[in-house]
Image 1: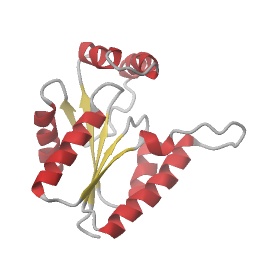
Image 2 (image 1 turned 90 degrees about the vertical axis):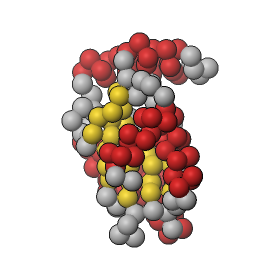
Image 3 (image 1 turned 30 degrees about the horizontal axis):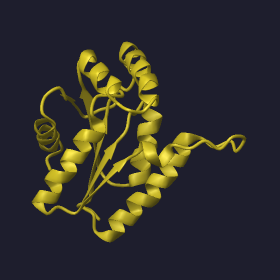
Image 4 (image 1 turned 180 degrees about the vertical axis):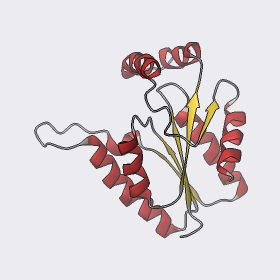
Length: 168
């Protein structure tokens, strides 16, 4: 397990975390590297009225189980994607995966973010756009990363830069 490493792509909504994670997965597959790619939003997205659940705690528990299963199966690289708002959430993710983690914050010009989120067919993306604006103004998640990479060009180029930063 000592050679298992993880990469977390973070940034505000619309910076292309999921798209870059998918491209990294393709690159790792082409290289024959045993990997798993996980959009962390799906591991914590729930609504259980009155149950008193903490979405971040659910995310961490689910991630711990999923990451453990992948490690047991022989995965060497975990590619994760999620907006990380604060150090507590990042620490929960680090603890859950229990392997070395490189955090890369993706950025993009606001006009690019607006274009990406407005083009989405889901109604929730309009809310994400407003949240992205608020998070950018507040500097949410800034300073939690090991590296910052702008994702405004071709996805493949961004993915290759991320892999270089992670030394994968």
